[in-house]
Image 1: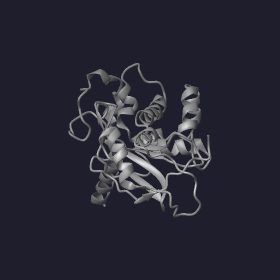
Image 2 (image 1 turned 180 degrees about the vertical axis):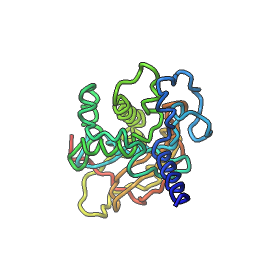
Image 3 (image 1 turned 45 degrees about the vertical axis):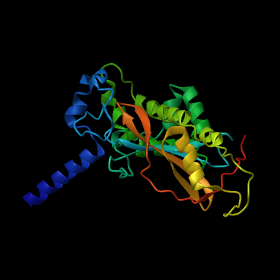
Image 4 (image 1 turned 90 degrees about the vertical axis):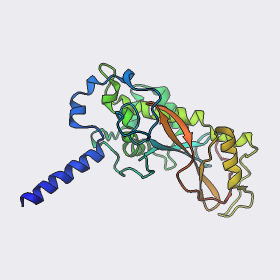
Length: 269
């Protein structure tokens, strides 16, 4: 019985560490961290001895951008999410990385402090199910809590306001979408949305290589491209991080699901 109890306690400790990359001591001394002591040139996934406030512990991330003809501006991809993975490319727990910060009212949290950010989210990060708060809550709990550099401890003494990391996460993703503007990159290579066609196998298509070459011409890396049938669903760009939050694109770690791509005009304005 004693051995079983010890095993159970050990297993619980392992699970707790996997959910929370910070130790109990870290949480108790969170105000002692000084962000300006972090080296600015650390590359995520290159070292294991770096404070997770200074370099993301989950240092391989994918920015997934959606093309849904029913949602968002007609000249923009909208956001599905920014998803941290382990440095070996494995997905993190479906329930996220910190149950103590699994906030359920993302719209209210952001709206209380930054109405402009909330407006931008409604434009560029809409839910294709019509419930933006549900969508943003899901993305925050599952993915935002896994960005270790946004843990409250990482803000340092006197610099953290409750739930501040929520706005910082969503703001950083919006900035990435604007910087890596897939619509503009495709347009620069002559790839533009075509007239809508009915059915799952439209004939007016682009080749997967055309999409990959267009993104490579813009940023020096290829994307992953996802389709449902032939219809374009998502373009994904992979990143690592220099320092705390300087994202830079890297070669893709995922799989493509397209050969021929139907990239149709949106019905929105």
